[in-house]
Image (tube, rainbow, N blue to C red):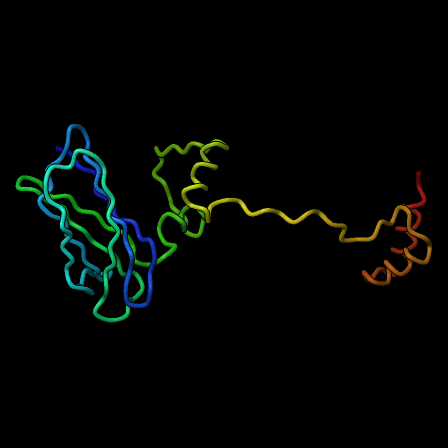
Length: 187
């Protein structure tokens, strides 16, 4: 009787978090007698009361429940949500950060670096895989680049006065300005 048990942070406020609890049986089904969630500090100290979800019985298909956990005071950084699901013979644990934008986002945007072991192999994502991930995590979608624009004036068709003005603007001395003019006169 295997069970997938996941917690995902949906939203955070100063003293509370909104979390989705996902339970999915693997195979024919899984018996669950209870699910409990709690907010804790990085060190494991309790920040909220334990919340018992009214889930009991045999799960034969996936289910997701959305819950709100209120802390006893404002949430510190690095707080996390811990959860336990159980039946008479097994226990499953899950956790997720209570800080928005941590973990997966930081990794995928390259805000943190990892040092893989020497035998680790990474595969490039295909365009379709990137699109699928961006649909689930919109913050990963590439931003649109602004249209290209000319930073410097077109010197090839510039007049003698425009070239002198440009040379003055960028700080070229007389010798460098003459060299630029000669270069632009070449076919």
